[in-house]
Length: 80
Length: 203
Image (cartoon, rainbow over all chains, first blue to last red; front, top):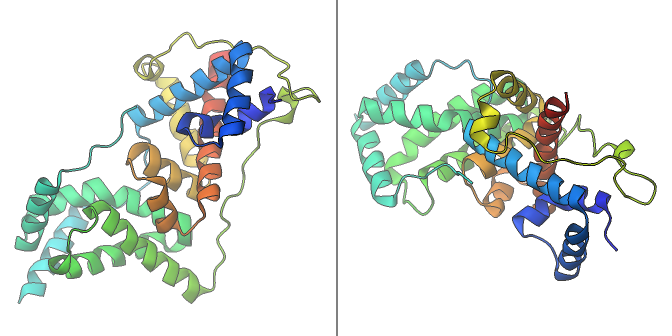
């Protein structure tokens, strides 16, 4: 019998559809009667969508224009 | 869910042609598109100290090898494999061990009773859509800071999977981790970000 803790641990696998059949059924039965876990899964989905929209980036201090220029020069020198 | 759109094969062939011809806009484009995710992969494998250098070297190798690029994968995946190989060699050379995943708090145990049931109710969020969540600048900053504080390998898995649309088996190849590890790392990253939003919503 699946409990709330199992849902919390397997939430990503539930959303990715990545679970063995028996486990999937057990977790979905729990979700059927537990509104807290349904809300939790919904919140996790919203978190994922929000990250995909916000697209947080690595901290990066590289001067990208300078790097692009350096690579372009290298590619041209390579031809010679 | 919005995933990063990959350039079509035709667009990518054109882009590669422009790069080989030395088109400066094409160089600006690839560096602005791919440098950050390359840095993420390097940090996940070799750690912060050598990541910048590994990425710079990867760019140089890639540009030199570009005329021989056969297009069997996307340009992005190809670049990520180059940076990954460079980072793995650097790890071997420096004889470094980078912790795969540290500093993670598991699902707080105090949320569940001994039988595994939640103590507290979980409510739906008032601001349901990403746009309404992100309309709040304070929350946006909280999410960004939480992302920056994730272990590097979690950031790399999350960025590749959620933002770059790279498939899980490819991510495992790039980072040289098992599929079950990758899934755990993705779940930990998502859960940590969820906690940060939840905490804000509860206050």
